Amino acid sequence: MKDLTHKPLVIIIIIIVAAVCLLVGGLIGSFIFPSASCDPVPPSCPNKWLRADEKCYFVAQETNMWNSSLHFCKTHGGTLLTPGDETQEVRSFYNLGRDDYWIGLRKDTDSGKWRQLDNSEWTSPVEHDNSKVNCCCINLGKNLALDCSTERRWICVKPL
View 1 (cartoon, rainbow, N blue to C red):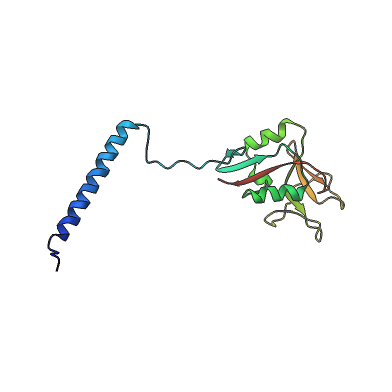
View 2 (view 1 turned 180 degrees about the vertical axis):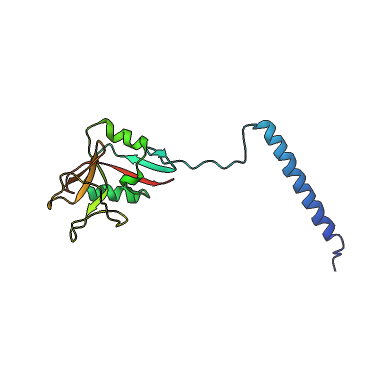
């Protein structure tokens, strides 16, 4: 039969050696890599996305129909921008030019009311609203009703 009287002593020695290795490794590492820290790296946005107010924004350079624009945003973990998600940085993109950008407002064809993507009612003005248009874009800070099948640029938003 094996002698087990030295087993606890061996375990204690292993723990002490491991602790000394970690301590010495940490001290040496701080001299070799003085700028390294254990602070977590702040989250960032994917390539071609803008970070602002703890959210990520994507401003499309190409054009697409409203449904395809929404699909793009969803496949990238976001949704079309709703007016409440705007930041000054995002406003600067669509206020500079004359481009229209699809946003997350769509008319409920049954009630005729404009709704955001979370299904909450939108009560602010939508210009050029009529029975033939069901989607909304933004241009120079104004919400404009358009046919969903027209092609426009779009803006996505997602959490950081």
